[in-house]
Length: 171
Image (cartoon, rainbow, N blue to C red):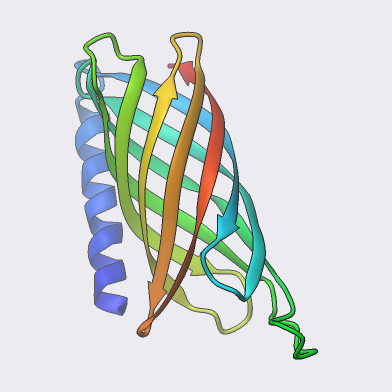
């Protein structure tokens, strides 16, 4: 898993370097979002978080987003066992591709991101993070998406299905 994390981090850095050196050719956006969701594991009852997204617009239909934030999965009692599963927090750092289905740079889109999730609990380590999404972005900057964010580490996985409400600024 450590090798995968290094590959993803290096790839994100290369993409960011490539697009910042060609900044005159592309426009850029910066966004801030709130994520709320339902975990796919019985160990958690709610997922909530926030993120910042820096988006390199290759053209009006294709963008390369680089996203980082914080997500908290709230632990719960499993069944009537009397055992409370601990909450889990992580910092996702992802890079991906966002494709608008029309050529206006707004409207319906598909998004796929990959990256690393750095656990904030003691001893939680780093997970592989993947996040497919569909959404709608209005030309005034509002963005509403439905996504799945999964985490995989050492043969175990969890995730959540959620909504992302965001506002983007043109830079």
